[in-house]
Amino acid sequence: MPKKRKSAQEIVVAIIREITDKMREKHIGAKVMKGLVILAALLTFVVLFFLIGYILINGIPHIKLSLFELEYNTENVSLMPALINTVIIAVLTLLIAVPIGIFSAIYLVEYAKKGNKFVEIIRITTETLAGIPSIVYGLFGMLFFVTALKWRHSILAGAFTLAIMVLPSIMRTTEEALKSVPDSYREGSFGLGAGKLRTVFCIVLPSAIPGILAGVILAIGRIVGETAALIYTAGTVAEIPDSVMDSGRTLAVHMYNLSNEALYMNEAYATAVILLLLVIGLNALSSFVAKKLTKVN
Image (cartoon, rainbow, N blue to C red; front, side, top):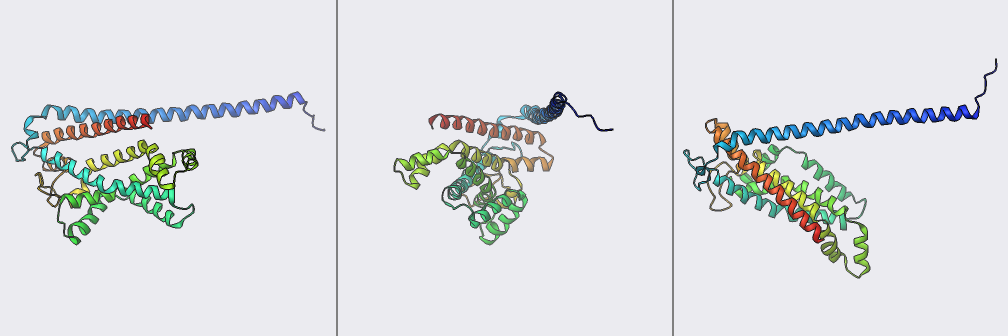
């Protein structure tokens, strides 16, 4: 028997039904994805608040004035030398890494030609360096800066090692910040008669400062929390150094040593609180500065 032909109305109804089923499937899939995203966000917040709460509960009761004396000994277990060393190493590292990272990113975005193989090699190398464990950087720093250059265990050796470690992240964030600046800014500057160098430093770079600052703050967070690389390069001496060629421990290394000895766990928790407050303060400061710079620009 010949098949009965469907009427135009039946065809339209079938098409609408098929479209509705597909939309329903997409709607269900969207709900599932939304639920997974919410679940992941809640899990992240729960873990974060648990860690912060655990550190604060165990550390705040053990914070005392003796922890902030300038001279460390086994009685006061002062963290002040480590805090000062942390600031010194962070400043030295940023003085080395930030100019190199920013200028490298400017070259890659503004001056290098598209499809340049040299640029591709630099980007591949940068991404590779960003994924190397910190212990490998520490071994390299010990072999090159401490042994080959004979800098011994020193603040300077630790700062150069950390500069190599944070350089890839500074380069990548600066590069993305420069790319986010609209081309109309550059075209307008060229149209007014400005040269390439003036356009980059007077128009493009100020517009990208918030993004660049975010990368610098991420680098500071890694510097402040680093232990493995500094144990091999900066050493673990709990004193305020007389020069950058002297050894010194940071807050993270200080906390690691206290917990490793298992004799000063209360002081280790108190040091963790100070370290946490330092990181939170840096993040808050960076957000404030970024907002101010955004309003100015």
